[in-house]
Image 1 (cartoon, one colour):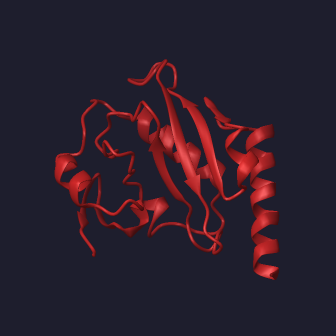
Image 2 (cartoon, rainbow, N blue to C red):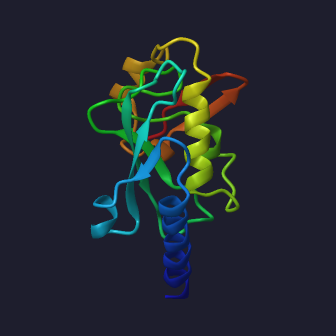
Image 3 (cartoon, one colour):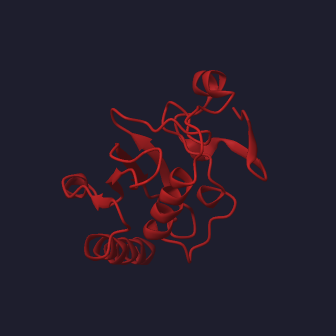
Length: 160
């Protein structure tokens, strides 16, 4: 019970931070948190002067009972999934802070900023080279993918 209270306190604090001081181009989708505080949708707009300028995206955040010790499950959802070398067409995002580089000191804000930065620094809109294989074979939960990061390159290992 204490764990759940800590989780709720942390999520409420982060929810307020996101409402009061959202990262540029990001807004909490208020409707998404009415049903459950453990699942949020963040509306996102591509940053001005980038390849994604004027495009609208949605990020889905799901928090387990182990949050913040366990990273949230984060993926793009909805009609428009950005075409990006680290974003699969099913919305899964290859970003190390969502898996092995996660730390409880990070927050929804820092994840949002990392995703904005990842999209903003993109030089060419294209899917990851293994997109179709990955989308066919991956788990619905992107956290179940074992990513290998090497510099700007990454690979995944299918785990069943």
